[in-house]
Length: 309
Image (cartoon, rainbow, N blue to C red):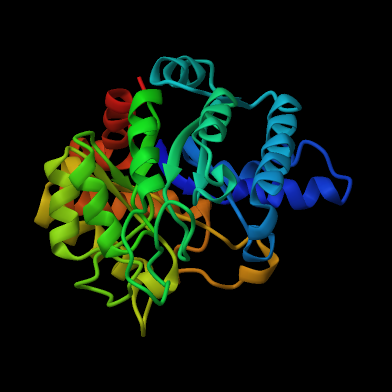
């Protein structure tokens, strides 16, 4: 069983429901093969950044309706609810924001999203927002003054901070102003693939020192520039395990094969959830079963319990 720390499925749910479909998740069980718990991240499309709050709430509304129409899924807000959901044979879904754009410049809005279930906040997507600069922004600004306030409010509310997508200045700013564990929900090792979305050794170790977790991401351009296949993906996981310890590595697949504009962009041999058993077998050959259980599920469970409850 896997705890997947990052999924863009809410985007698909929104698009499909706009086309008149219902129970999108229930009708597509293949999306959850091997998944016990998953962070469902609301991503603000670049063309909707100007009305990000409206768009974010529309996506959230579609997602909540879809979960209500299902017998297989539950939105959870703490680890106790997650464990209960798993015992009932259901999939536990967490709500995340991939980029704080829907929050605008309002701590009140952050609180509203929390009341609606938000438990994971990726501070930025790859561009600049009111919180800070993403990794692909031309400038190199760190957290803004408002971003500092967001970090404090997230601590108060019990929202887990996610440092995937933020630039290095903002990454270090965040660690300067919080003592809480943080995660990078979907990032790999830059030493193995020189992409700005990946983490330096120093960043990986800094997350581990806070008792955080890095979720290895299965996006080809973050796995390898020439041959992004399953073996290379496993190498990223093992590299981070060797560097920071198996307690600080998890899985954040970020599968996008179901999104029309991203279809076809998959790691060779690890194209979708059906390949999860193969990944786990390869990891067990290198790490052994107990360590793989932590990488696959237990490490994110630990951090969520510490920060979210």
